[in-house]
Image 1 (cartoon, rainbow, N blue to C red):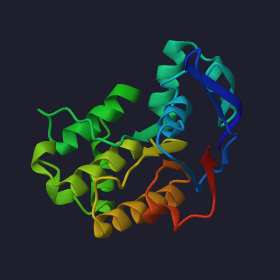
Image 2 (image 1 turned 180 degrees about the horizontal axis):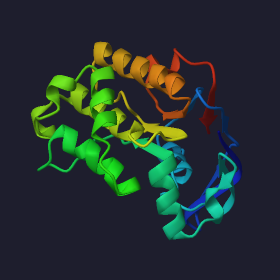
Image 3 (image 1 turned 90 degrees about the vertical axis):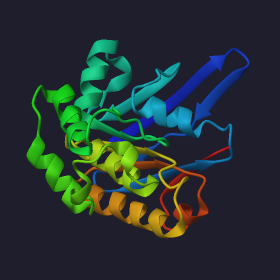
Image 4 (image 1 turned 90 degrees about the horizontal axis):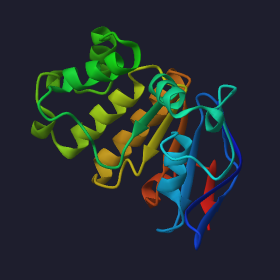
Length: 209
């Protein structure tokens, strides 16, 4: 579902990341691990089309997103890529449900309220739908981030350190939810992490050095 080849990226002439090839099928999970400063989050942003690599290709369901114009890339990302950021970014004035509805509206021009409510139910936070994001715990906010990433039935979900702010109990719940929903919706799941609690659960991973 997502594969890369010969990806490099440079912030400056002195700093070039040579990133290993990656392949992740629908319903499967791959971890990107490595020490700080090795390019984990950079790689995730490249996979999501937020950064353009210096060289290489990124195929998502037979589309090379590197070759897309900025406008087409934005449209493609909205419909095909869900991103769970390390820190949740919500519209503070909107309720949890409204934040999810907005995600579908931005991608399709329609508010998919039924899907939003179903995802919140699956994630065990349906009773939080009318609250503002600021009224939720960190663990609940992370679940809302997962729901938002899945709103448009993406082919790929990218998660950046999804357990970094969570205690052991909530970290385990978030990983279980991410992987189970990935399989259910046949979504390729790529997780960037340095969390040993996550690493021990997956064999399929690449390490940036």
